[in-house]
Length: 170
Image (cartoon, rainbow, N blue to C red; front, top):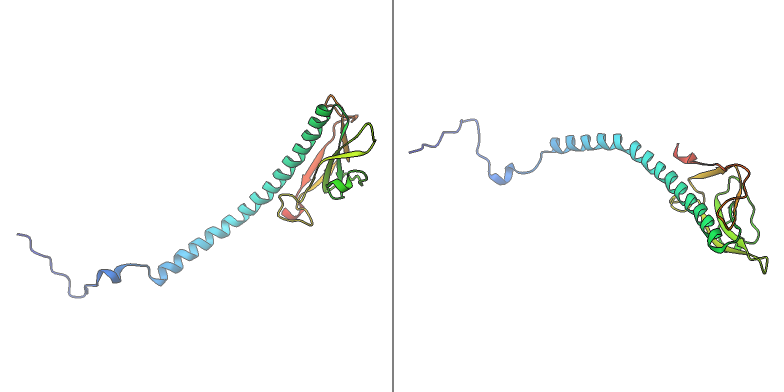
């Protein structure tokens, strides 16, 4: 037969409900560790977000250039890809101010019968940046426009380069 062990005299028996949970000291230590880990992770996450904005802007820009090329081949007409500071919408398809540091872009072609520019697509570099007025990503190009012919080649004498930067991202 088993005999129950005697408890030491200085130890009181506590009910099971009182033994659950955390003490205030344990909670404070846990919060301090969590705050320390968050402080270490926030700069890395901020860098990740800034890099994502750059990558997204470059991918949208590249897709626009590829669309202009594809439209030129599909229509068998010259199609222009234009960097501009004007809004990248249909209202600026006829007259737009070209800029090598344009914040927006427009794809258009000139109708051979009416000689009027037809709008295909346009974008703002603020797209995807979380800001509507001033984009976080800037683009600087060696040219402000690229014209693709019906074979998909350009009118450029040399290759064009475009640099993307995120000045607000550090």
